[in-house]
Image 1: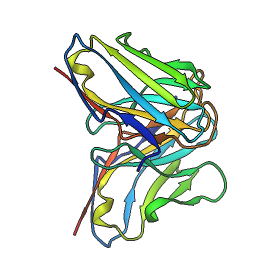
Image 2: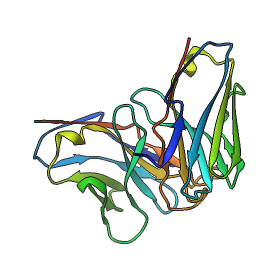
Image 3: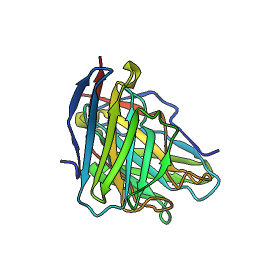
Image 4: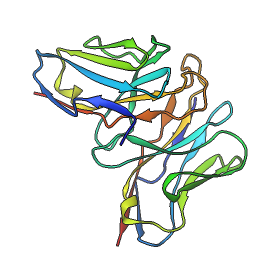
Length: 116
Length: 115
């Protein structure tokens, strides 16, 4: 079965410090991986994706993610956190299961809190 | 601003009412989705339309009825809902359904409260 795990319910970071939001996956086919961010009272906003190629993927708002096939991980990173980065972050993987037609499987979400 | 527009933003309805949620996109996307999201939880897929045809119904109760009038519009008709149906309903679209590698683009949702 396809799955994605976000082991941390919440990550706390001081403004200006680097941040990492963790994600691990389990898929039977090629892992198409996505990160989304959700601000309060908003929908999900696409940040970045990994399909193939370079393991370091750069996305919106200064975020990047590193694909690690041996560790089946796709951690989201940012060198210097901003208070405005505080939000709920979802990792997702494309579902290759029969009948799913490639829909997304979401992790449970990680709340990022950046303090001044 | 999101490129997927959902109306209304908020909706309060009684259990006997009939109402509809609307979603519109003009990005030329051929796949459209309805999700239900409870507070601080990930979105749960309800329906998928691919090229204006319903391709996935994730065992959603019949009190939710989707409709795709054309490639830009997606509706969700609501009837006789239960209090547990109170949630944020998100619409999304993508360039293609199925095995594509393109991201889904989400609207800001309709926050639905059932009295």
